[in-house]
Image 1 (tube, helix red, strand yellow):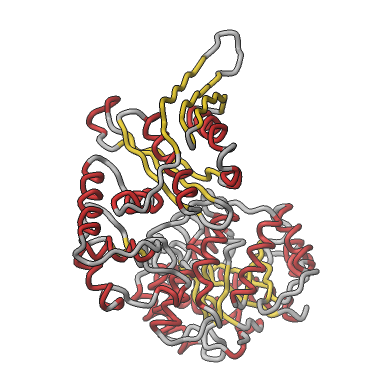
Image 2 (cartoon, helix red, strand yellow; image 1 turned 60 degrees about the vertical axis):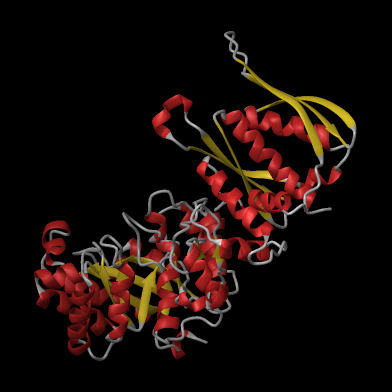
Length: 524
């Protein structure tokens, strides 16, 4: 499905506008990897950055020119020529052409305030700057997209000036006029009304929309523009961008495709995967509550809700989770009813009978544990062990005799030393091990593995990938209970476990040993 045959094209600016957001950084290689994933997903335009602005963008455009793109067209981004400067002599414009991209997107000033107070020029010169630059790039055989910066603010300040900037871009030959809510302060009803005026004033050139999320309506504004005829939407994956971010493509795309019936991509089931990929490459935590792609987007916790979902899924789900590559999650907590337990047990392959003594026992135990500070929402591994224990499907792998940790701080500049010792009985064989580590958890992990490895060599393939600590009852100050959550992986799947204690060391030990224990239980 090509961009030319689509009602609305996707223009992704994650690699340029997204990188202007705090905490979002990409290397040249990172940008290339994300660009290929966007291309495979079906994005029509990928804005790579501003040629010449930094070495990473130079590296990206050089590499992109030699790559094969299945679907997307790569775009370079830049500005109109400088005022009182011939377009052919402007070095920034030359860099745009030298980037060798099939598409060039330039922005110009729509707000008279910027023209007179920032550029220090007059409106007539601003119109010429827009017209000249678009025409020059068109003569260089490029597809030219014009981003009307601050268009909505400019329109509200002086509508005639803002509209004349669009006419200048159209006269230069721009293929699309993109209306930008650069400050993110425009409301959906304003977007709809102003876009309607633009459509009537410049009927010969299609228009697009570029919104920011400063008021939390970036996606809603983009939808409003599409509703009155916008043919291109610009945004970023996961909404990354300056200040509060850009229009979030992972929300906009499924809304347009599933709610508005506008074909955006061939395979929407890859959306969640793409969302997580961008987070991983940019080293950012995923937003678990994100619409459509978040881990909790289709999670159910209340017993009444779970009971209904068990019978009719769409009674509490606005779409099927798998349509966007997500999945239904049944959470187990103190709010759980028996339906939560039954569905969770079925999910992990330990089915329980409704109304059975085992199901009731598990539910009672969960509520008792959560009252004591436990949380099983992100600790499915510990929940599985609880179900195994309560239903007699648990095999004790070792007997712990004792463990001990010590931390030695030296005054002579020597690095601190943390040591752990473990005494346990494994398959009737006594084991006594000791290990040093980078902190208590690392030392305990090493000592535990030394004791178990001779008996269970497969645990060598298990590694700890996440460790989180949370105070359960902060009002108790230093005497507060601590909850520790740990995530392990064997390279194919991952599982979370939880431990709670007045001692952070004991809480860590519980979560740590449960992670290893579950791995061994599953290999029975």
